[in-house]
Length: 348
Figure 1 (cartoon, rainbow, N blue to C red):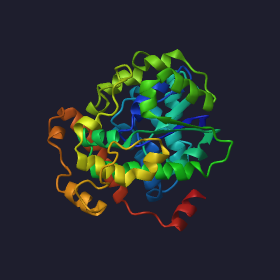
Figure 2 (figure 1 turned 45 degrees about the vertical axis):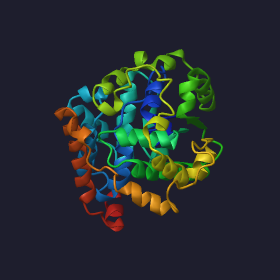
Figure 3 (figure 1 turned 135 degrees about the vertical axis):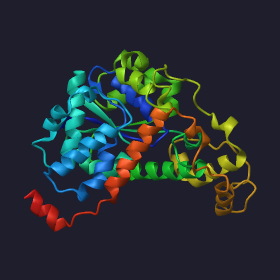
Figure 4 (figure 1 turned 180 degrees about the horizontal axis):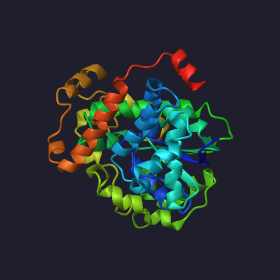
């Protein structure tokens, strides 16, 4: 039996405005959009390392849930209540969906929005738990996305890593969406368009998703309780308790240098064109001061950050949450996969 009724599955990249759009939908009276949990993302990779219908699997899902950085309403439930949610379930996807469904019930809402990065990778797991799923594909100018990534204290790497991720996520999303049939409602959205025309864009998206528009979405910082709580949980989400920041675009023009902009534009050119993003360097050499894209990348790699001083400046509690989650995921991924025959036997 499906756990999620008409969920909205958000296709997005990190630093793409996805947290903002999730909280905009969380302000809707019919949609619960809790903060990042990465339940589907992680369990899609780790489920093969646990026996189906085992307490070991249930404990892994609940431990992952408890380690998340965001705060959910059902966090306040005692452990035995959350264990009971999963007691009759067999597979990891069912268990992740059951926690999302419980959060929606706790919020008094019929639908959920799942906000997990690179959702195209584990869409089959999400679809298997959904009745009539709906998809919202949101993208952001890769130059501003890369700037936000570079400036994010908890994000490893800078412009190069961000550009690679943007390309991977946009290409993967487009390829996956092309395989869906007409029975799956799909809406597309650019971050910049939400900033410039929030009501018009949100009305359009709601129409495509068969969801009534609600004015509360425009004042999400007032109407989404999770926006207010998550804004205090991480510096990466500090803007969630503020209104839509209409001027939060084209910042790359001031803060990235020509080498960085040239690299991003050259590496993403076909996808940028597909999404309607124009070059900021008309008439200038494609690779700036360099003859090839590889030479430009090699130059930028010299200063690509890994550990960032800003990370150490974060409050100790915030660092502990991120590090605890990362260490848990690393331990889960280090478990050896079970042979398919053993998993099939256990499932039977």
